[in-house]
Length: 296
Image (cartoon, rainbow, N blue to C red):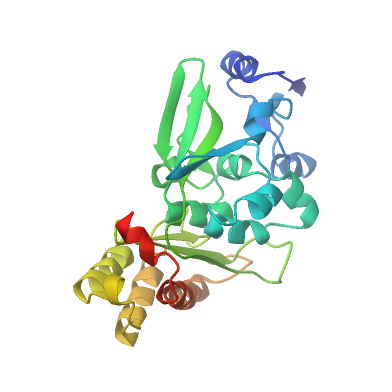
């Protein structure tokens, strides 16, 4: 196994173009586990830790450009206001040591259906910035996942950054695991209210071959909020609407039975998480969080 260690971004792209099978590594929290258990034996490892720009983030009026190498700890400490859903998800990742090393870019590169960051990225509305020596493109996160641990990157591409909409309303993330820490999600759910566009977005993890959005549930709830004047009034939601939203979220799942949980349990748990997180986000909205965003 050869170890490639570029000093800058252009050098990294050149190395990836020359060695398309090279596996990028930054935090190493996924890749090194696979290597240590002999689940993967790449010919080349492409170490990106010397590429300083990957560990930087910047904000505009509406979005955050998150470098692929920004660790979870910094998201929690520095971006909890701009990206509250992702910060909540980051809190559930591994241990403090893993959060200090692990990155959203690495989570995306692994493309696991159980990736903790993925539901929050789907709910917030994110785009993956992919680059190669041929140029740069942005991939909507819902189009990034193409199968179990498969993604839309070309062999010569690297993830440079993730562009994520700043929160304009309440966001929530919930995860079911076999214990409270250091655990792969049995299933996970994220929801975000977007008052400016009067829309709702969701993200579901570990309950389908890829992370998915509950599109029918989003459309239903968005319509119910608009037709009932709830965005303006902030009135309590109808219990029947909350139940229907939860049912539609559970129906968006395509889970399997495995050692961590059954398909039936995953569907039920997603429905419960959808109901609870919607309740939390709507109570926050009623309390004033995001109510002024409609005028922005």
